[in-house]
Length: 453
Image (cartoon, rainbow, N blue to C red; front, side, top):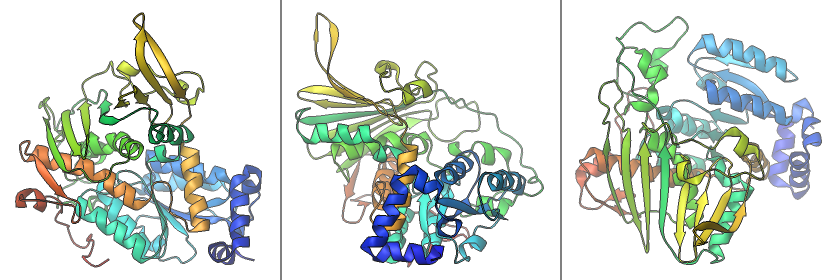
């Protein structure tokens, strides 16, 4: 039985599904997966995160990299060579235009690790080509295109996993159960933080793109512009490519918080902030505070990019099953305030702890659970869902709804801190046409998502 027959059988028979799960649950079995039965992946973007994901999928043993696609050929070719050395079977093919990979019917899934402004377009095109998708966070650059990605996934019956790994962490499932069981009491406030040091940077003159770099495709749906090295190295801080660190990094905490406390669309959104260090070229905020109002609950988000004393959870703590972060100076913590205690939650490892009233002014921990960085579990869940056709832990719908929080907040801030009321049926704003217009971007042809996907 060849790979395609194997995949088809796992989609349609209980026996095939059981076999597929056995392979995935047993690492040794996964490593022994025949080459013809391995899931063929097209990597779309092989910068830092994309290259890392490619290596991790190869290490599983039940996947192979069929294509390495990147607009920068000088990156793609050497990385494809190293990936070829790490896997059995034919080496990955190199393409600057990933659409060539999508035309290959032997490719089962695409892994999208581009800058944000390409995420939805690559996802929609991949779904239309019959490929399942692992797309890095955030799902979309705008609210409209995020909904189109959901529509494409459903229309073409594709598995789309968003790279918000916290939804695959066992310790986070335990935290969610603790809250749902009522052990934290009534919850009316959740505070989400994203604090670090990420300095502004100086403007750079426009220039010619390097040899082997397809600038037109990199720019893609963004407005026409000459090549600028800042647009490549610092794209996170330009509105044309991203929504700033609230959606670049803070989306992990926003998504985890929304999942833990069980909320969807906010009733209202209010956000203020800005780029207070205006000495450089960055456009997106270095200071930002947002408030999301749900029924009976408030969620706040606070961002600072000038605070070197706020630290992400260290790799050592991430991998430890006994150590916890020092919560007051943890840069990416979530605080959930219940009537019976406050829960501190770390993303990407770090675990959670519940603190109750102090004793002799010393902290009292009522409950806790640790856990490691859940990247392997998230990839496992994606591969398992390719076999079973079940919705993944970070399904595209959930990725879209979490991205909306950041997108709504940015719109409020960019309109001067106006309070926006959300219509959950349409995902638009009530009584504010200017804000609603900002839910959609203008696309540069031919890099366009059609109204009908």
